[in-house]
Length: 266
Ligand SMILES: C[S@@+](CC[C@H](N)C(=O)[O-])C[C@H]1O[C@@H](n2cnc3c(N)ncnc32)[C@H](O)[C@@H]1O
Image (cartoon, rainbow, N blue to C red; front, side, top):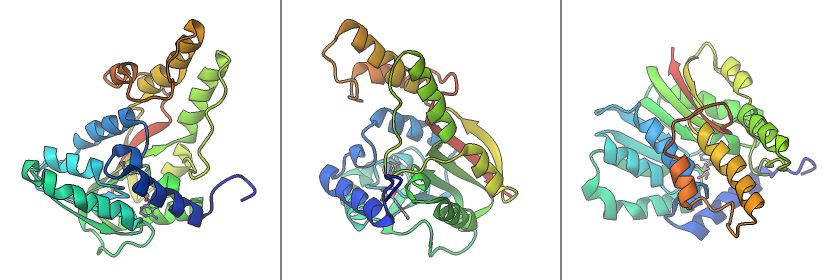
C-alpha cells in the first residue's frame, strides 16, 4: 500500500504468523511483556466476581486466563485468527485447576459479533482496535463492543494513542534519539477523536496513562544510558531487570503510547 500500511489480508497474515511462531507465549501478542503484565494488573482491578466478561481479540489467551485466575468470572475470549484460538484452547487443560472463573475461547471478528445485545458486564479490548486497518472499521469494531455490553457496563480499552506516541517521540528527540515508528500493521487511535465518536453511548470515566513511567524508562533512559556507556545491552530486550523495575514504578506523566480508556455504557 502506498502509505506503507498493511492491507487487511496482510494484517491477518501477520497475526497468523505470530500465532504459529510464538505458540502459547505472550510474545504472540507483543514482545513487550512488561506492558502486557501492567495491562493485566490495571484491567483486573475493574473485574468483579460473578460478572460475564468478553475478552475481545484475546490472541492465544495469555491474559484471558490470568483474569479468570484472579476473579470468579465467566470470561469468553474471541479472536479473528483460528491459530490463536487453537493455542488458547490448548493452554486450558494445564491451567484450569488454578482458575477461579470459567473460560471459553472461540473464533470471532470484532466487527461482526454473533452475541446478542447487552450480553456482558465488561468488555475488554487490548490492542485490537489499532489492528483494524482504518477508522471506519475501528468505529465498526467499537460499535459492536458497545452493542454487546450491558447498559452501565464497562468497556476497558487499552490501545496505542497518537497523543502518547507523539509525546514520547518529542522526549526522545530532545536527546537526539530517532522517532519510534508506528508498525505498518497498526493505526494508533486519536484519543480525542475516539472519545467524541463513541459519545454519548459511552461516557469516559478514566483515561489512564498507566505505562508512562515504563515508556520513559525503557524508550528514553535505557537507550541513552546504553549509548553513553557504550554498554553491550540489547536495548529492545523487554526481559531485562531494567524493564522489570520500571514496570513496578507508579505511572507519572503522559509519555505512554499505550493508554487505558475506562468507558461506561449509558
Ligand atoms: C496485539 S494482539 C492483542 C492480544 C490480546 N488482547 C492481549 O491482551 O495480549 C491483537 C489481536 O487482535 C486480533 N485481531 C485482529 N483483527 C481482529 C478482528 N477483526 N477481530 C478479532 N480479533 C482481531 C489479532 O489476531 C491479535 O490476536
